[in-house]
Image 1 (cartoon, rainbow, N blue to C red):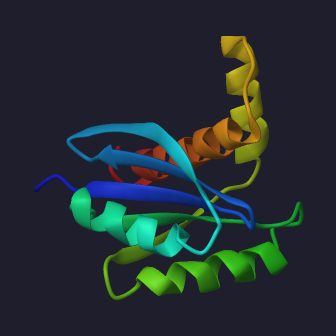
Image 2 (image 1 turned 45 degrees about the vertical axis):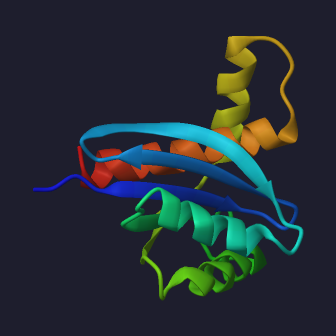
Image 3 (image 1 turned 90 degrees about the vertical axis):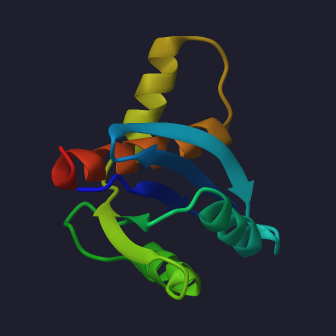
Length: 134
């Protein structure tokens, strides 16, 4: 089976966490976050094109009872903007921000909210890779 390039997004109202991977070496790599500022969707389209992305993995938020939330609707509507460019799949993002905070804290030093978003996107992508390409 040919390897695939995958882009993951942790979609928020202010920032979008980003991570990439290739299924040949299924390790998610955090990328710089994208500010939601009107140019964000074009930046993502440019990344899809430049990196020959086959699949877009979008974090799927749920509440503690496992139900969709207003953020779920926001993320799924946002992701639809890329449906003509790439296959979209949704991956549960439960507790990824907590896990991202813990990972960054364990590394020591200062980190910004954008670092947490990027790390959360990498966790979402790694979960996807392990589930479907492990």
